[in-house]
Amino acid sequence: MASQNSTLYVADVRKAFGRRQVLDRVDFTLERGELAGIVGENGAGKTTLLRILAGELKPDHGWVIPRGRLGYCPQRTVLNDSLTVAQHLRYFQRAYQLDDLHRAHELVERLNFTQYRASRVKALSGGTRQKLNLVIALMHDPAVVLLDEPYQGFDWETYLHFWDLAGELRDTGRSLLVISHLSHDIDRLDTGYRLANGVVTPMPAESDRIGAHA
Ligand SMILES: Nc1ncnc2c1ncn2[C@@H]1O[C@H](COP(=O)(O)OP(=O)(O)OP(=O)(O)O)[C@@H](O)[C@H]1O
Image (cartoon, rainbow, N blue to C red; front, side, top):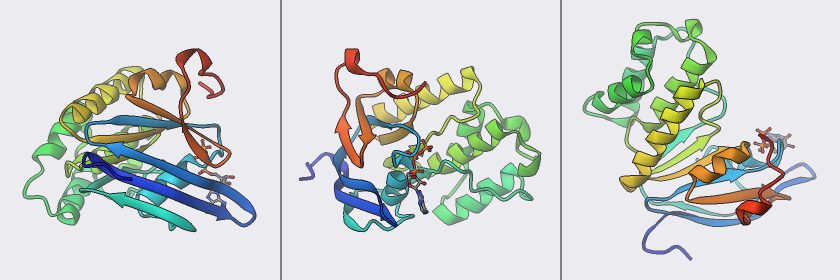
């Protein structure tokens, strides 16, 4: 059952696509100030699970109970090619009903793409699009952050900035769930889970951590 401190309670979540039972019985909780991650092979169901947690996809069965605002960074960027970075920020300012864009601009600086504020999305590189996708997930300071391979296309330095940022959010009491298929991300997490055969299980000891493809 959800503890006083839990910000996301997930119980007995199941999802099938046709005859393929992608999620069989998924249970876990995310605590306040926890940086958790889920790894799994391609096709294991990680994105399906995150879409359900974000409320984008309905499970066949089960409960997902978030406490506080959600931030969701989907694997595929949901951006409008003909709008600029600044226009996206203003659009989401209204959607999130934010008084100002202070936090958004701070994140843009942090991820080092201030110079693209006036650029249209269609002119951005994949990595810069992904940076914008991440800013949109974080600019309203959500209590629970769901991130689906959020650093795809990032160069190494930006990848490290991402993990610094994730650690800071955790240290200020936010809860984060990061989907990854990189086994070397596991050591950056407070809690690592593996999704396999439709079930989420805590990661075994370091010596047994094999199978997730780097
Ligand atoms: N909308 C859908 N309709 C039918 N099948 C789907 C749908 N979405 C996902 N699937 C199937 O569910 C399974 C899990 O897909 P999912 O994208 O969740 O895996 P994943 O672990 O995120 O994979 P990857 O690491 O490649 O991103 C796959 O077999 C996929 O083909």
